[in-house]
Image (cartoon, rainbow, N blue to C red; front, side, top):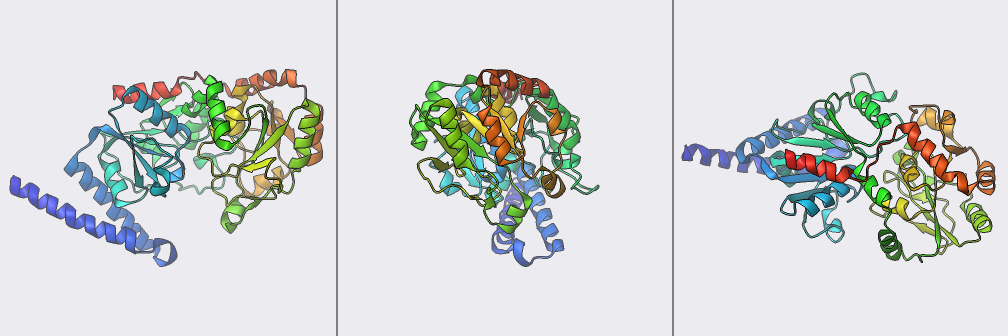
Amino acid sequence: MPDEKARLFIFIFIFRRVVVKVIEKINIKSFITSKVKGLIKIIIKIYMIICNKLYGVDDNKIVFTSFSGKSYSDNPRAISEKLHEIVPDFKIIWLFKEPQKKKNLVPDYVTCLKVNSISAYKTLATSKFWVDNFCKPLYMYKSNNQVYIQTWHGDRGFKKILHDSPFVSTNYKIFESNNCDLIICGSDYGERKYRTAFRYNGAILKYGCPRNDVLIRNSEIKKEAIKNHLGIKSNINILLYAPTLRREAVKSKKPQSIKDIDLSAVLKLLEDKTKKEWICLVRAHSAVKGLSGIPDDLVKFIDVTSYEDMNELLLISDFLITDYSSSAGDFALLNRPIVLFQPDRLDYIKRDRTFYFNLDDSPFIIAQNNEALLEIICNLEWDLIPQNCKEILDFYGTIETGEASKKVVDYIINH
């Protein structure tokens, strides 16, 4: 038996070297044929299977990924931090596209690995728990004694996703349909969406979205700390403008234009109406290369696209303007004004995404051009905003307890 095990270790060592060479040395994106790509995926899956069977599964190890490794953020971050708070001896690993750049951003107890690296595949194959807010590749291997928790990144979004989208083919498949053990959501709407979009029949934990716990708590100390980090005085009001991506901008790899909105006029009107000082935070979607058309005034306008966590920006903001982002459904938890600025809705439906419902039948305040936006702000009845937010939350059947992160940690502990 010892000789047999030694031979197995030698085999996996050699196999590992082969996988490393294949993954790291070959430029997959530029010239490899689809058949070779398929072979590489098979090799990776075999490698994960061997690691899983040879090294086993560490019940005390958990792997987090957010937005395919782009950031330390969102629901996975909230769960990760709560897990360490409750069970500090858990081994917490995060996968990043650029782990070296994240080491100064994450807590000391986090181990950072490069996503899609040989180390990442071995870690995934040998960790008891996976937590992700994006879909895993189909070629991944997960054994029956591992637990995959899918949090997604928009419980109350407008846009149709995955199997619900008319833009995907009929033979479209996702890893999560048959490999997820738990999905997290914070609304009746979200639960219905996950059943159809993921074609998922498993367990759903409906206590809220972990990322929204910070909005429910609404800590003044937390808000002050975030403002200080951004260099914003505590007495200044904040407008957050956060449009979602356009496919054309993603494909062209050029900044996305925001020429349809006059943010300078919006700020001036807010200051005139409220008699307070305002600044504007502008945030592009992580999939596009920034925004073009941001006013040059660096005092009044701050580009926060690179800021790690969107919900921290929501927490400090006094007014949100977006277009089709699920952040609108989260911001309603704060009882602050939300306006959807949608000058290109028909074109967006044709080119980008379709919606789960008729937006005009929802409680959202919508402007279809800059003139309408200014008129809405001019006539805004601030005292009625909490009622509008309640209607938005009721529209989705929202269930946010402020304890969503803890409920997920309890699930992890019990498994």
